[in-house]
Image (cartoon, rainbow, N blue to C red; front, side):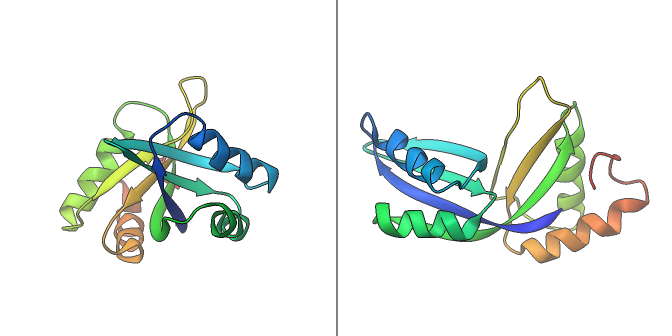
Length: 141
């Protein structure tokens, strides 16, 4: 569990734009650990978590004119039913709102990276640590 840097890149919704951004990140050796892409008509919002935020920031500064960064809570979870529900329940008990969340990985792996946008990632991290006495499954490190 840690607080990470998420980048949101606002893209024109046309062929090749996503390939250009992700290709530039690949060239800079900034591996994408988790990704979510949302459509909002003429534009899309690409949310990415990279293993090297400095490299990602450099790439976006050079290649994109509309992007932001934010602190997010990053968890490595077991990829099984109920794991997300346990985290959501712990946040609910601590009165922490989940603005949005997304995952990485697939059904062939037993672990996934979950990204949670919450108002205060450090408070959310403390709430999860407080639940380590059995409120959360062992999949929450």
